[in-house]
Length: 333
Image 1 (cartoon, helix red, strand yellow):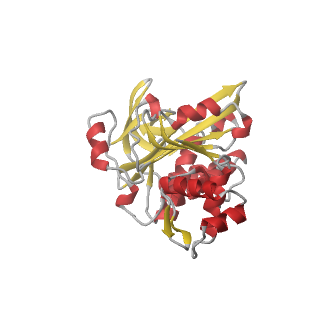
Image 2 (cartoon, rainbow, N blue to C red):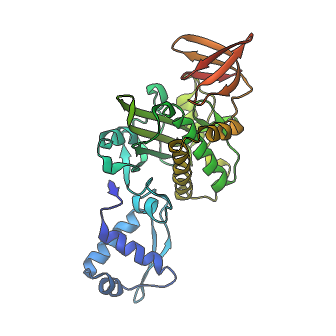
């Protein structure tokens, strides 16, 4: 099942009319007259809206009333009320997909897709950093965002950290939960991973051509089930689910907040406000000041994490010798 924010106009018209009159019942004839579609079409749209998880109360002689919105991250729910300039203005929803990142990468060359969001209820081959598998069952928020950045190529390696900062900010604003940032781009709560990111970048002539941000959030997942599958895998340090900490927030609220915060850090990068991002990331970091061990392409590095540079590299100090690490698996010791 695939939906986009610009298809299914009849269904969306019926839904929005029900939303705007959710304190009253609307008859099939009312909907037919106002929306200028047949009563059969109204009935078909109502059935589909119910299948998508919206709770609609039906009463004979009175009609239909919307009682509850769907919990699904449907594209019109993402675009509705979103106060961004371009991120999230177009969206696609897949019930099941191999990977939102793969789908986004297949669409990235169309410049009209700048800011487009691809979201899935479930991924069968979710991607993590370094090509690792990311467990993506129902209950999580799995999405990718297509971007055509204007910022300098030197900011490309900082962008994943900036995006993780945006998500941490949105978690705190919507769920009122303190989260921390583990280098390079994990979000943790009480030292357990609640979200992660990866970025695929296409470069041409020392310029960023395309960028796709992949985001995985353990929103309301079965933690024990995922831990069973991941226990014993490299660099596993436990996972958490946001709903373990706050059960009152809907996933769409977090997505709206994240897209808004993401556009803010994207604007900061585009405007050269690098120091601001580095400072804010550092203030939330669980890595800076810790003794760490890193597995890198050049071998193992250990020492104290003292800062991140303006390109997102982690600076590690040992015996008064500092080393910069752009990428690697990290363990806090």
